[in-house]
Length: 169
Length: 331
Image (cartoon, rainbow over the protein chains, first blue to last red):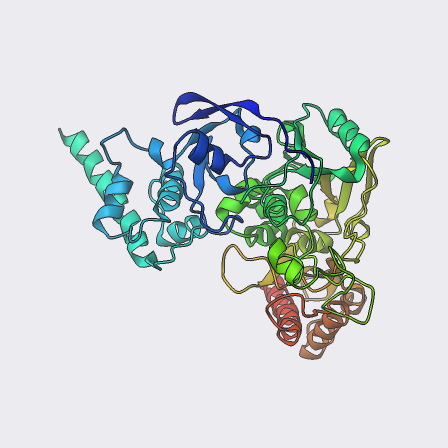
């Protein structure tokens, strides 16, 4: 064991805000988000990059915060589950998860929402196979996968119909 | 869990990275995507004094191809970028399909080609928490003096378990290594030591900077098959990559077969190429190649799956890959 490394000021851009945290260089992004920035939406599940509960967007790309060193992500735009909708509102994806029962115990939900958002931002009309592939890094221990796929499908449908409404009005 | 404390270096230039690696030698570790290194640090498999983050070295990411020089992929290119590259998919399909099987989409967004080629070995006695390992008194590779896979010997049999390397061996790739004396290239097969203790041949201050695939492999058909428990996230328990060039009559002009996740290194099945060249497809020949695959690939009790099953799957995958390539070749 070496003597613990000194803390440094980390400057992170999280959910559109410049944030600072005092943390040692070996601190994980997940821990900085949860402990220093009080963003506890991202969850620690497996702690070894195999469950997806800690997923956040880094420059729009879903990334596992439990295997990321916070200091390495200072030049990036980070979006956590707290940042995907304005406070007090829900996105179509979140509404889909609520209505189709895509959230059971809720622990894996932040990671699934992040992976779903990344998918739909890139490809607004994914096939069922695209959806399964995009969510295949995320584990749901309630095993509610069918409801989760249904939630995504519902979100896509809602988004399309609201776009149609917008065009009509 | 928290990581052991270390100093983090974020060099802005490749030369600076090399300088830091030279200065700290075995006390320095490289972090690229982090998907292998960080869980290993969590388990306290190593406790480096200095960790060198390669993410700022943007020049190490990129995919280039010219008909004269072939394919070059920078070490920091993400696995997602390789899998989604239309160039790799159309000209080097075996690489795109092998990379597409690595872990899951989120790990591939972070994981890099260089990192995947430098993966730590995997063994059920090694990739465990410190508490678990200590309860057993460690193993030959770490904290102990007995290899639980083969207790009579003094050799580490931990399996080198990557998916990109067998595809690249089947494409006759070379690895580019940069160190204090500049860049050098060697056949990918020579990079792996086939010893679980050392695993890869990097001298002090050296790091992997790129992979090169020769021009003659552009358009080469190939197949990768992977054994794993789940269809996502898992490391391979056995992997077989085959590439083949056959003429219109189905006569094989060149073939390469490589196996992974069953030895301390990914290995080319040398006899396979010799046996296949100049031959037409037949059930007997495919059986012969499948046997060659298991005379090279020797799974031991390094994983929760049994050696017998993994050996059978090596044979099956080899036969299946040859059938697919020959069928498509004639179609």
